Length: 343
Ligand SMILES: C[S@@+](CC[C@H](N)C(=O)[O-])C[C@H]1O[C@@H](n2cnc3c(N)ncnc32)[C@H](O)[C@@H]1O
Image 1: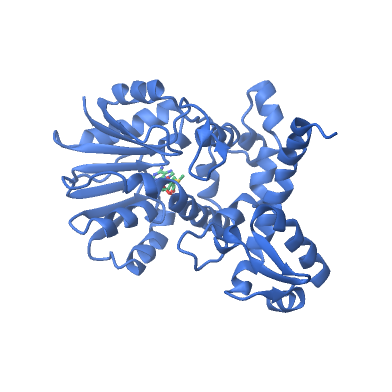
Image 2: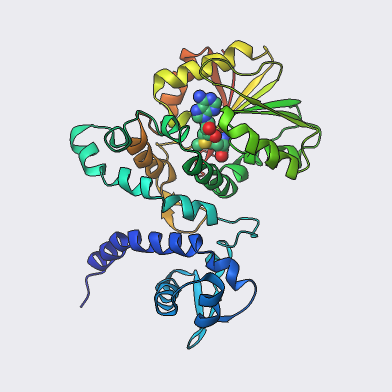
């Protein structure tokens, strides 16, 4: 008889292959080639410029995980997860799948055992930098892939948490490290009384400006490029830090929070969207047991000196920057919202 735990571990270790299969499926644009149709392998191969036997094997590998359905022998359709790999799906995860199969990601993660046994920082060994942002800043193509991947992540994780907050008393938001403006766009679209400023590195803001214009927000949202460790734009009542503190060690995080505190009015608030390391592992919104914070922490261990923090560790950072935690929303969700006020 099979030992269920042993088989489960075989499956867990093979998820690496499935992740790469999903990445290949996304990169090759196969979900888009399906459109709303059932298709044969030859049809799909012609549409995606693939070799039919290889494509058949890729499709079959993905039938077991909900990406593909084999409707009848040789005839395939997108499963529910496959629909989410189309570029035109409102909750498209295609760009995240591409990002997770980037060669530099594998190369850094290869060094996880070395990081755990020695405390070394993999990204330093592999890419010669202390923080992945310092490297991405010099790599326009990898940077573009990363920014697009973050838009996918935000659709699934940050935006649902951000939209659970009551913005009635908010007038203007500065989104610090806002990427392409994905979270700010969702908040402004749902709250037409709010104006915004997207603040990010100069290399990102030109793309962000286009994305905000495409969302019809050019009139309500300005864009500013700069270094958040030097200063952040003033003149707002609300500052948003979404998936930003998790990328930096305490020294950087306190510097950034202090820069925000320096321009925060007495009645102002800071909204931090981040993962928590200390809630219990539970069944998340996907219906599968998964601890988002502790999993993202592996990424941080490989990509720099940052870590996913506990509530107490966040409170310590806030106190050091002259801020205090006022309220914590959705503590059990994959992403939590912390509301801060001047101390
Ligand atoms: C993980 S992404 C989060 C993007 C977005 N806030 C979200 O939730 O999807 C971190 C962002 O911080 C920005 N960033 C990194 N270093 C920065 C710096 N020194 N000044 C301004 N932005 C910076 C990056 O360009 C990136 O867009």
